[in-house]
Image 1 (cartoon, helix red, strand yellow):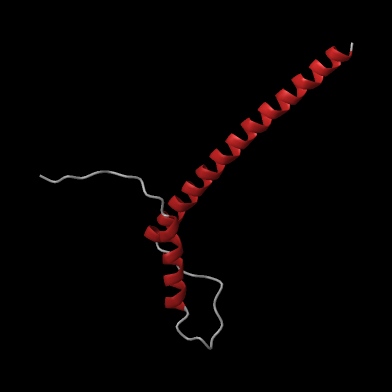
Image 2 (cartoon, one colour; image 1 turned 90 degrees about the vertical axis):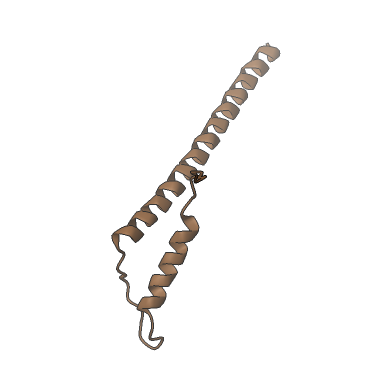
Length: 89
């Protein structure tokens, strides 16, 4: 019997390694200038897009959480201002 466990792994470090490897393969001659283009195959492109998707959803989640916190802070400040006006009267 095979015991397998499925886990989700972010492809962030893989993208960096793949890109560095492609650059090293293209830039064998140190004396020549580097090109602005590099060929990326479908598998590499898919890995890049998965990394981008992972980062995008991670940052979107962080942004959503910070916006929710800020909304709560603004609501609390508004309530405090209203209470202070009532206390002055």
